[in-house]
Amino acid sequence: MKIILAGAGEVGSHLVKMLSNESHDIVVIDNDPERLKSIGSTLDVMTMEGNANSISILKEANVSKSDLFIAVTFSEDVNINSAILSKKLGAKKTIARIDNEEYLMQANKEIFATLGIDYMIYPEKIAAREIVGLLAQTGSTEVVEFSGGKLHMYVVRLEDQAPIIGKRLRDLSPSAGDKVQFRAVAITRNGQTIIPGGDDDFHQGDLVYVISSQAD
Image (tube, rainbow, N blue to C red; front, side, top):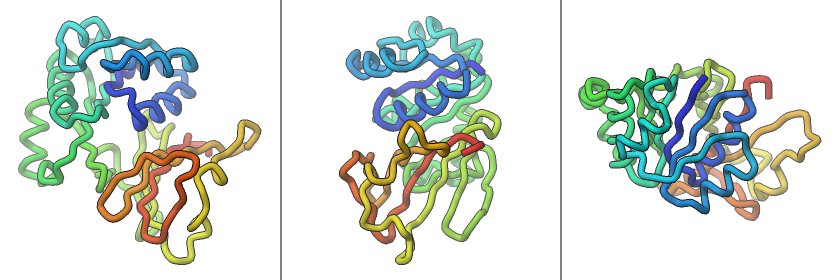
């Protein structure tokens, strides 16, 4: 699958790391050369410096041949505009990260679908139903599938008995030799989204976003 991903921040970087393990043809676009250098030096992906809103950049990335365009930059406007442009230029499916829950209202989603955005991701409400389908495992868990089900993002609310409460991310992250590989990519706490580092710990009531492969 040919995937173009706009945004090499924390979320984009984690997505690229997981997707690159699935032998996809990936192009990463970002206007920060240092972020691209970090990704390009460790992963087998193509990087392009520039604005994802640029038609010339999208054409250079060969967006017309892409199976999936994902926009997860820090700017909602860039995500929306680049997804629309990519669909008009030939991308089969487009996903845009948004910051406005109003856009998820059915009437508004239809407007964006008409414009060319197939799916929208809202950080506070992953909208799994709009991406592939909501697989209800518990009352507080959502599962988002990517890449035909090969990659999963789990959204779990930590109840008062959750065993990871009070533990740091570095204490829970799998090592290279572990059989099960996963990565906690975000935490929503008190209405704020946190991109966790190794010393961040988990609190009761947190919404934790975890990415893993289908097997893991």
